[in-house]
Length: 482
Picture 1: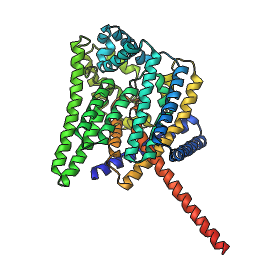
Picture 2 (picture 1 turned 60 degrees about the horizontal axis):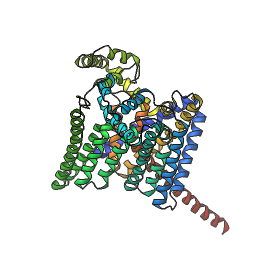
Picture 3 (picture 1 turned 90 degrees about the horizontal axis):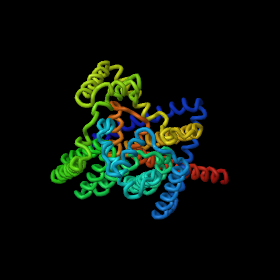
Picture 4 (picture 1 turned 120 degrees about the vertical axis):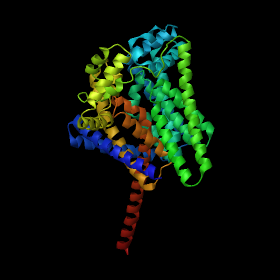
């Protein structure tokens, strides 16, 4: 599949840029090349040691129980220690959920939900939790942690299916104990649930890709995920491209019936996805909660911010004040569109901005410690956690790059290609829209699958080298003895 090899090549180039950027940003954070190199090497050795332990005989059930107990224990412990109330948008959504749980929906007409009506999906989810378990921030956070660990379990089965049992264990273990994943469990973010749903959909699809039922279940999971976090189009695009490559391959091989069946299952999945969006909109409107579709709102805001060269595509007060100076609706949309056109005029500046955004979003320091500890007064702890995360991320990027090169060389395309496509599409979208480093957590599971294969390949190479060295040593010793 030439198309698959092309995407693997692009993926390798992307991950090379990310690896180099992350290393440079870490050197800048540490203020020392030697310290960065030493910490990175230490983390890599720890990763290989973990792979060695996970490669030993341990029953699947035992591994999953240990993973769940340890992973949840760490997360609940962190939530208990860091019992901060929500802040920023997270606080606004939580307060709205409390009102919704009490049957009051006036918040839906606020300026925030007028601009971002897609947040209603997550708000109604939180409201349902509050209705079921009472008004407890702790419960909301623990349920988020459960979904976060659920994603780790999905990665275990996906990695085992795509590569082997050890890769599945590595992916699950690294995802479960990657610092930002733990820290963000004390934040009421929609990412825990949405990531779980999106990757559940992908896993269901790949498990039995020849079954129509699997495609329908995938459409259901991704459709609900879109209601929680509006990035479902990334998954639809990735799956559609993945499926069309399969269709093209089958057509070239003369298997027309299977090719059209594959295309039909893709259309059925998209149909389920669209039906869920329509049903959600109709339900909210018929209930009188809102008269706007979830897809309505400030449709140019993310692009206007993402093309702000002075702010490197990040949120900034200048754009916020500019947008708020116009009444919501056509007036604001026209003003934002005009600003976008102005920022696109200088093609050289736009190209440079996109390069900086790629490096910043995928290579700069993670912000999870900030979001988790904001306003807590633990500034030193925040800095320590941020510094501890840096070599972890550099090592992950290095192993992911090695995995992509190994896949390219081995010609392994079928399963891993979907996750590579998702990663590239998501990264490509953020060249144009607003960036934050916490947004990369949305596709972190895809990265971890690559990391697992990279670690396993490295571990296997080292074992072969050690065995070869041992044989050489024996032969040499024997020669002298003679």
